[in-house]
Image 1 (cartoon, rainbow, N blue to C red):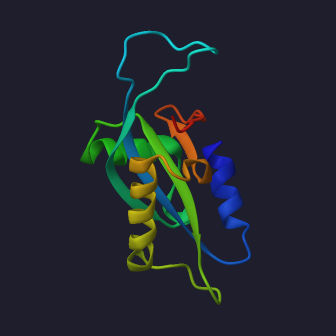
Image 2: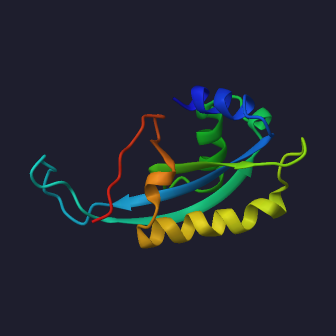
Length: 129
C-alpha cells in the first residue's frame, strides 16, 4: 500500500509533499474488540515529518528513520499536499497542514481524510467514537 501511495503521489499533475503524523494508540481496555463492541481508545500524536516522494525509498526506511527519533508510535497518518505551477510545497508550507493533521487526530475530526498504516505498513481503519 505504501509503494502504491508513493506512485500515486508521483503521478499527480502537480508535485506533492507527503505529510506523516506518527501516533500512539491507547486502547484504554484489555478487552478484545468484537464486531458488536469495537475497541475504543485514544490516539496521541508523537511526531510529524514531511517528505517529497523522491525522499522515500521504502516504508521500512521511513519506520527506521522514525524509530531513530522516537519509537513510541504504532500508527502513521499520511496525507498529500499538492504544489502549484510545477513546484512542490516547501516544508514551511507544510507546517500548517501538519498542525491541522495533529488537531484532527487529537479531536477525532476528519480522520477519514488520511491513509493510516500500522508499523508493518498494513492499512488501519479508525472510526471516531
